[in-house]
Length: 222
Length: 202
Image (spheres, rainbow over the protein chains, first blue to last red):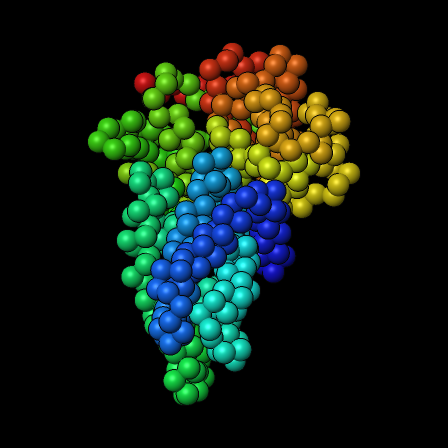
């Protein structure tokens, strides 16, 4: 089963590598959206520090929406998804592999980039570290929850908009605890509580969503 | 043995077929015919369990045809090629076999591709291959699969005369080894030594 997981991850990473433009689009979208705020709000350091966590997190949510549509769409169109459904192995494991690969090319780069972007908001170095930790725990949650929406809207016309309406409300807990961790740190409170809750959210969605997504895929393919 | 019992299939509002029953024993080849839109692909999808029938049941070796045990015995090639454009022919064959739980060595995979007439093109990305060559990459699975039940949707489309002959002789070999084949095709099928059974949908 672990071997299957590795096969899927390797395959999807290889595909992403051969289609680098898609990955870079998501990252640049994130960079540009976050960078627009200091330009729009003006060089008021206090305001910038205040809005930084929320801005970075909302930009991360929107960037993840961009890449989610591609999670199953290509496999659906060329018939590979049928082969995955008919594989004599648990579909949830294949789904989990695809989600992990998706996070490595769409979520992880955002988390790595965030501390650099946070400098524009005059965040102190320790706050940047908290921001990085929160995104590292939070972005996999976005990929996991988003996968359910991606599976449900498979093959639906205008699926992209529907996907946003379906998934963005479900992102709210991750947004609250993720942005909250950095805000708490800036306010002088320990961010540990927020980060623990994010980690709990990650564990819960990691265990539950692959099964739900697998079920949604079977329904979508009927 | 594959048994279909009193199948009814509905697509949207339309009933495509109803009361369809047949059994397929080892060493038999079943060809499903009928005009476009008569439900050939839908029937194949019912048989491999991608969609449930409105009524009726499908049994494999006496038990309901579902679950991992059934899928281990099944090779389904749909009318889409399931070939990734960005991957090479070799990578595509490797990954498809890995998913089917029958990993190949490089030597086996290269031999299968060479047999399919793709020698020298193993390392080209599939997007530069022609339609027929992509089909050959997909059909290379037939050379390496150990599954007894093959369900093939239009396997011969886009193939040239030589490749059609190659596939037909591979089908004959599979049937001779007590394999089972269900396929749809609009071409006249000439599998040496096998009289195909036919079901006409209308």
